[in-house]
Image (cartoon, rainbow, N blue to C red; front, side, top):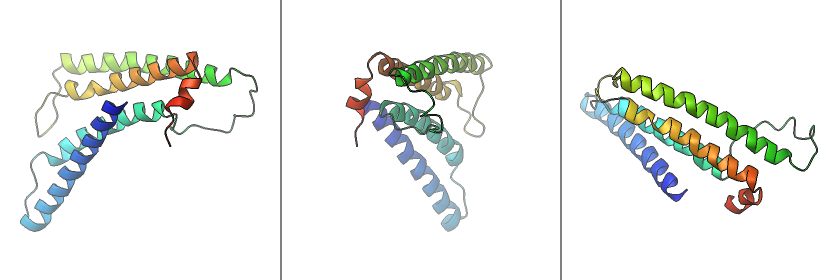
Length: 150
């Protein structure tokens, strides 16, 4: 998780720096910073997807709580984590398919003209990483409380 946190922090920092530099260039020099907005979008996608895995690892993601009292059996949290893992794995499968299509069609980011699929690969990684964490929580619910850090 530490590596993921570093990647997310660097991606947020790069996104912020790029957008700030672009605003300064526009305001003071009447010239946009070439590719800054597109690159910042890619950085924010990276940060958001890695943030998903971090939130999952800390059990800190948003979730609806309206039905918490409906099911009152000991394994309800385990069942929830198992369902989450299965759903994330299914979404991960489709994310891999999407990235492969992007690779096959050689999709590129407009303006900066870089291949899109190497950036998109973060999506299946994040979904798979979150799925593995949910599987661990389903197997060992105590791991969830051990990983939760204030």
